[in-house]
Amino acid sequence: MTIPRLREAHVVVLEGGPSAEATVSRSSAAGVRQALEGAVGRVTPLELDAKLASHLDALAPDVVFPALHGPPGEDGTVQGLLDLLGLPYVGSGVAASVTAMDKALAKHCFRAAGLPVARDLVIPAGTGTDQAATWVLDTLGCAVVVKPSQQGSALGVTLVDSEAALEAALTLALSFGGAVLVEERLTGREMTAGIFDPHGQEALALPVIEITTPENSWYDFDHRYAPGASEHLVPAPLSEGLGHAIQAIARKAHATLGCRDLSRADLILTEAGPVLLEVNTLPGMTPTSLYPDGAAAAGLPFPQLARSLVQSALSRGPRRF
Image (cartoon, rainbow, N blue to C red; front, side, top):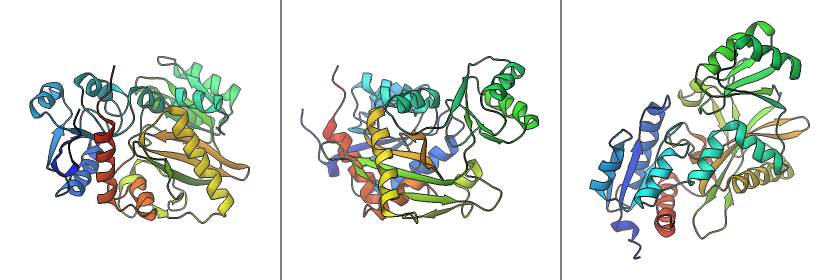
């Protein structure tokens, strides 16, 4: 198979879809399209909808760039379709996407790999709120974080510090329809570390970023995407040893899940050390997103980052069954 040159390639950028994060996805896609303009032969935006397969068949792109967040774009569904269509695409394959999107499943893998994670409890879908609350109180107490297991961007996540707040948090998380992950609530500094892993090259751990928000707030959906609602300290003010330790965790988590091209690990730095929360296989590419900040600090400005990711997918080619 002849690999098209980057400057001749036709890139389809996927955006939107039925996800609760569709608006964020469209913002990421706009940034990716702008970064690729002039560097590739053609850039085509494409909405994620029920006609996706036929649209892709008609467009016949050389590479697909899924600028998608949340299911079904980030959970392996779209990746499986692209594999069946024989199209190269940016980002992790089906298995890594499925595992990373399911927070409970990912934590099982992290724990088996010896990575530091918080104590947790998984509440199966369809569990009654009263029963779920009893399990949580008996196992973890009331100082917990309640989150839908298969959502991103902190959607449905509640920080709980009382029995009264626990029932409402569980009701909200269970309303998303899947299992719910409840974790002990840890106190510390919010950190994130990206991995840049283009095909055929050694994975690069990007500089660690510390995320700060105004007092009595946390890095929820609004603070992630509203301009000025959070501050990214790049690189994070850490000792060299601690920074390397966080990067090592991000690198091992990326490898444990089998990610490729890019990922971003989110952590809490407690007094006892860093604790891994989750890994994002398609981190945001919006003006307020963390991954592009880390890449820029490593000498990869956004246009170069986007082009490198497309080149990685081109070089890897479609999945061979």
